[in-house]
Structure formats: C-alpha cells, structure tokens
Length: 324
Ligand SMILES: [Zn+2]
Ligand SMILES: [Zn+2]
Image (cartoon, rainbow, N blue to C red; front, side):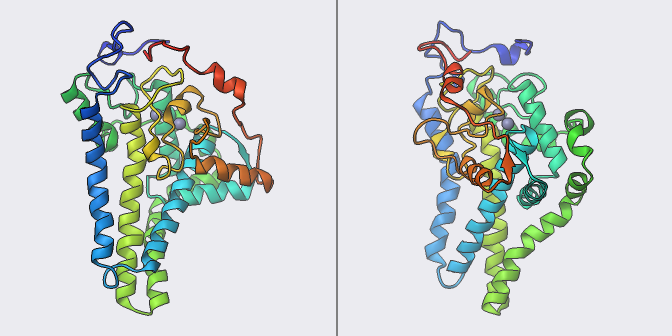
C-alpha cells in the first residue's frame, strides 16, 4: 500500500501531532491565513469592481449570465466529469450522459477523456509519486510546499508527461459519442465563450451589452471556475480537516463548498471515491449531490451509490489516530 517515495512519504510522524508543516492535522494559523489571502484578495477585488462599474460595465444580465454559466459548467465537471465519468457514482440514461459530457465541456477544463484519465491517475497515486498534481511533490517544508501548491494549482498542466488515456480511460474511448465530444473540445470552448455575448448583445441590442456580457459571463466566469477547480487539487490537498481515513493528505475545506459545488469535502471523497455525496456530514453543502438526487427521482440516474451511516462510520478515523 505504502509504495510512495521518501520525499512524500516523509509524513509527520505519529508522535508529533503538532507538526510544524502544513501536512500536520494541526494547521498553523498564519500559514492558513496566508493561503486564504492568496485566494480571497483577488476575488474580493473582482467583487469590488461590480459596484464601481455598476450601470456602465456590469448589469444584472451580466451577473445572471455569469452565475448561470458558472454553475452549469461547475456541475458538468463535478457531477459529469468527476462523479459519473471518473468514478461511476451512478448510472445515467443516455441523454443525461451526453448532457453531462457537454455541460462539463463548457467549463473549459480540457477534453473529457483527458480530464478523466488525469483524475483517475490522481486517485491511483494520490500524493505519492505518479500523482499528476500533488502539492507535496517537492517535499514537506514550507518553501517546498509553496512551490508544490503552485505546481498542483497550475503548473502541472504544462508538464510534458501526459497521462495515458488508453490506459486510464478505455471505457470512455470506446463510446463514439463521448469520444466525439472529447475531440471537439475546442468547439465547446468557443460555444461556451460565445453564449454570454450572444445573449447579452441580443437582449440589450447593443455591442456594449455584448462586450460586458463577454467580460463577466465568459472571461471572469471561466477564470473563477478554473481557480476553484484547481483549488481542489492544491488547497484541498494541503489544508482542511481530515476526519476520514485516506492514504493521502486530502482535506475538507468548508469555505470552498458552495463555489466548488460540493467538491471541497475532499477528504471524504478520497476515503470513499465512488460515493455520490461528498458532503456527508450534517450541514455540509453539496449541490452536486442534491442534483444527482433530483436526477434519480426523475429516473434519469439509477444505481446511485449513496453513502449510508455505517459506511461513513467505517471510514472515520478512530478518535485520536494520526492522518499519516
Ligand atoms: Zn484529490
Ligand atoms: Zn475523484
């Protein structure tokens, strides 16, 4: 089981619960605060730009397009690419299968088959050698982790080593429709960026309306969704609570729950990857699980792997055990 290299496996020893690295369960508050600032400040700056340019550079229509497109793409990724195509948390009727493939493609996170292959490899080697995007790649010291966070967040995508799609996603390649959607990634990207300015331009019958809708509904929306998705790879493998047993450093990060459509309950996800619900505890918001439930009621989704109480309990850490 533990075949990972020494760099990453040099985990905080069980006898040092107050480990000075972020790898410990006891997070250093200053480090976590710095990380939070890193994410939140640019976001707040963007939010502040809304009232400053209200009426000239942004309208209700722009915000509506931004939110709608954001959550269509986000759920396409979380329900479609991730819980369904990668992990098989439920079975989908054909039209839902296609719709999820399209919705996820609108998130502009790369072709479906590549996304799934990378993510399956991530689970296979999570935070060990072979993981395409572990923040622990360079070691456990703070500078190494800062470098690793950058790697896990963005830099890994520029790595020349590509995950083998034949090896990790043969089931998807066999389906011609899915293969086709994956191949037409560029077309879906153009469509995704074109919808907001088309709607904005037609509703306001102005070029300016098209331009502001493009800025907020296309550019800002895609950028925000990218950062939130990448944060699951970086932040949710560096900090967060770890109440469940997983062999990696995945954590539950509450403040990303809404924006990530429930994916930031990442510790549970690594402890029980096929579970259709990630936010399993009381009060843990998981909009993806809610939608899957609706799909199930409509008869579009079947064989949903809902976690029951016994299954959740069996994956919990015994009271004071160490995460390593
Ligand atoms: Zn992960
Ligand atoms: Zn996963």
